[in-house]
Length: 89
View 1 (tube, one colour):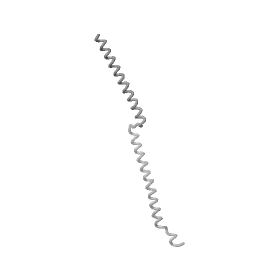
View 2 (cartoon, rainbow, N blue to C red):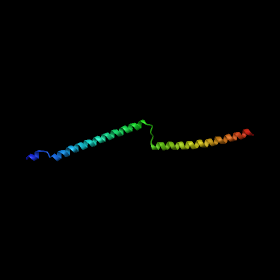
View 3 (cartoon, rainbow, N blue to C red):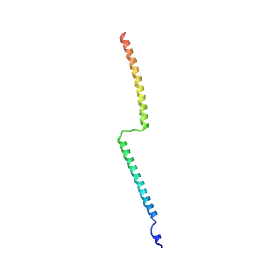
View 4 (spheres, one colour):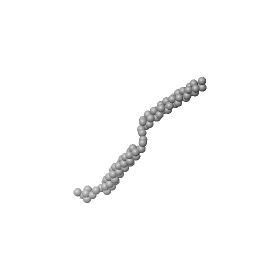
């Protein structure tokens, strides 16, 4: 074998070195991203947060309840007027 064949090509060595560093950097970035997501999930889990569907459902219940209260307030006002008329006779 010639002397060239036994020595590694410097450009291949640099390419392999940087390729390995980039792969490690990519996995490190993925790990950091995964950890950040886990921290965010944990923080959100500690909060009293509901899904959009649950919020919309509760908002609909609240609207119906408010409408019923308004209706009952009108009925009570009408009954009070009738009671006052009866008392004035």
